Amino acid sequence: MTDPERVYSAEELAAAAPPDEPEPPPAPDETLTPEQRAENARRAEQDRRDRHLVRRLKQGDEAAFRELVHTYQNRIFGLMLRMIGNRQEAEDLAQEVFIIVYRAIGNYRGEGRFYTWLYRVATNTCKNRIKYLKGRNFHRSLDIDETPQAQMPAAETGAVITFQSQVPGPEAVTEGMRMEKIVQRELAALDPDHRLLIVLRDVQGMSYQDIIKITGLQEGTLKSRLHRARLALKERLEPFMR
Image (cartoon, rainbow, N blue to C red):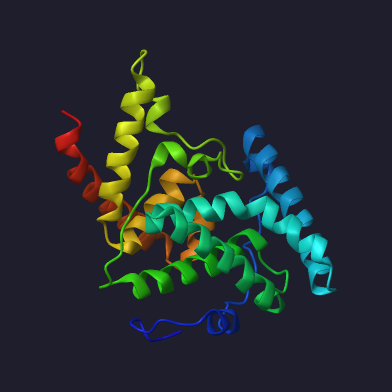
């Protein structure tokens, strides 16, 4: 997909789904902390499970596809909700992502992580929908306190931190909900590429390594863009933090 303005069909998105790429070799075990070793072991186990399900899916096992959907549907929905800002659109788009994955599973060769390949498919699909909605009379209707899926713990790196968990005292729930809505509104005003980096890193808690795989950015470029995105969001939020 090379035309930045063109909106693609689900069939075209499936046909253009990126092949997976080999993962870099892991760091020597002796250089890692016990926590890093435990995390690597957990990731390796998740990757083995995913590849097993993918092999079954390629053999026509529908139950394997349902299990993959069950594993990742909340995280993909959360990504779409934060990027699009409309619950119905996010639900439809998350469903479309898994349809595309089903059709494009042959492009996944098992060389890289299924998790990052899935997110590349999801981000391409999301960008395509944003182009479709651009210039249309699109109504954002996100209500954070009614969308717990957007606050699901990050399966890869621990719990997502929300404003509800940071505001002390009995007013925490009400104030936290208010700030969540403000953050989502101001996040939606950012450039989509900046919005994506904040959602992947600061909302879903992904590692830089995984975001690099998903976006194709170099590490220096990623960190520079994320810094600019955070500054832009901070500037928009300053009037509400006084």
